Amino acid sequence: GAYKYLEELWRKKQSDVLRFMLRVRAWEYRQQNKICRVNRPTRPEKARRLGYKAKQGYVIVRAAVRRGGRKRPNSKGIVYGKPKHHGINHLKFARNLRSTAEERVGRRCGNLRVLNSYWVNQDATYKYYEVILVDPQHKAIRNDARINWIVNPVHKHRELRGLTSAGRQG
Image (tube, rainbow, N blue to C red; front, top):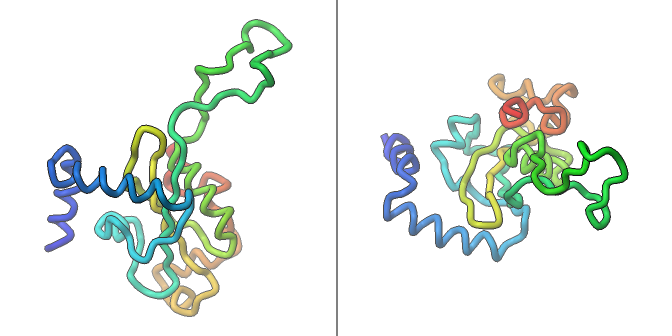
């Protein structure tokens, strides 16, 4: 069906159509806040594969994360110690940018549970991810046997404890 066509379209990111769309959208995303709610997923077929359903209780939030490695926060780049630990610039953060995006969104939307996330765009400075959130207080979620596992208290802030897909990937 239509989802298969969308999947094929998104698979060929170098195609003229997608390159143009991504470029225009990257400009649009730059004008907005770093974390902003979107009405519907940019990639519906991807969101559905990751557990999204178009019904009440599901929320999509887009997050922008700065690209690049992690610079060590030492004032003036001075490390008082052995030369082995003098590195400032060529260090990498242990977790990926997608899990960082999930973490930031999870902190902003504390009443919601992070289900999953996916890549939507990137430019020279930012990577943009859309995070799927679930409202554990909503009756539509609590009564749905497929998703009501996330209502349990053990799933509070899954993203902060590395329990989401991105967190497990490191």
